[in-house]
Image 1 (tube, one colour):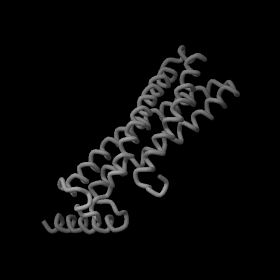
Image 2 (tube, rainbow, N blue to C red):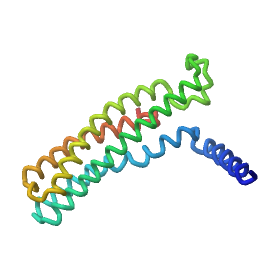
Image 3 (cartoon, rainbow, N blue to C red):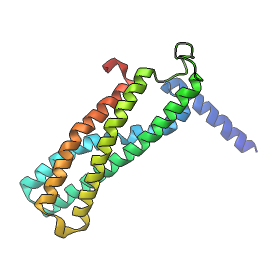
Image 4 (tube, rainbow, N blue to C red):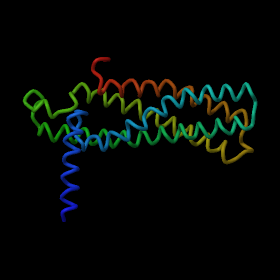
Length: 190
């Protein structure tokens, strides 16, 4: 009984300290943290994968070809994970904002407790749309790369160019999703 009480007190203390330094309630951090962890790799990974594919074409090596397929599959999987964790983050943020406002207009609500302004929520919608299209491209990339990994007889130039084309298209949507995501929490760059 004493141990559970100590654990509860520790959790409460940690939660309060976390709120002070990060300005986000702990329940939001639980849902947002995984998204913040996973969202950078698919963006940077697309860029690295394009350079890896170009190097693979120049060197014409089977080992590099397999590495390019594997790396592209990892980038695709990480994009899917980022999208899944983004849905959880969005749901928790909207639930928290609604609970704090209790249906009041934002002017009369406690502004200290509302963590996202209406403008930030608008950017969140734009980020979601960009992220959904990017996720769809990541699914295609994962499927195409998996074919290249699992079935060596299908490792043709055509499949290689399909992966490169998906990555090239993904670059635009990756940067768009990253840019709109940054706009949610950083009003200074709007």
